[in-house]
Image (cartoon, rainbow, N blue to C red; front, side, top):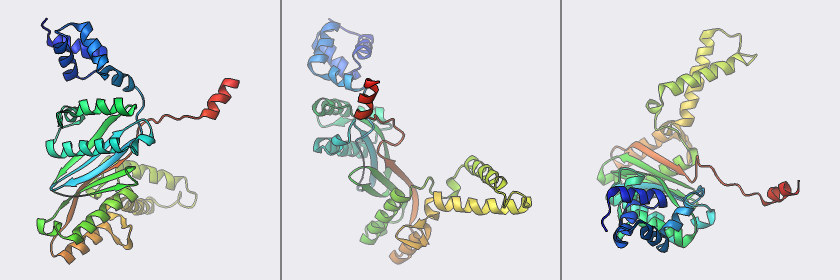
Length: 304
């Protein structure tokens, strides 16, 4: 019995399984829709989809550099316990390698990439079934060129940094140390921007509004001339840059240097130029709703 693309679409909508899994199910069942559903259930793929509705806000973030390609990725699971599972950790690393090698445009494209004999999506569903939790590949970044990576506490934070420098300098062990220092700086200090030029004008304007309001509400400064208030605002904007722009931040390992000055110092020592071009800082589960289990509160509410 033949089947159409619409049949594949309908099966996917009913089961929530992947397009390729649905196509294979219809092929194996000779186009019979009910048998295709049964096939997916037998293979455990439908069971994986049942778990897909559960909140996945734990897991781990991971960063790596493979030659001239750097990758940072976040894969979520339901519990922190899973993040310590060797199978889960290996899967996360395999996903990062796929991103490095196949350069997918987004997560959807990543799921369709080859991983071993099958796809990333198929491997993901297998892990969901074996581990017994919902698992989601949330996001990734991929840089080409000279990169450095850092992973904190086994995957709570991960940083990827891109640099513009010569291959000769990048090959030196001193640069490797420098690159890790910068990545650790980003992990610890959490800059929002690379440099002052990267801060959107609307962010600065909003910051000025807030600062002017703070001055107006301060009895010591409220009656000062506008010119003085403007100078005060500019001074505090300077502090904003120092706190939020990576190159303007105090270097965590030497407060006498900014990150920019530390970079210049290392570049001079290595006999060339180094420029930080971009960075990505991932924190596990940031921005995701987390399930909160309070057994005592649950029991108390039942007794009311």
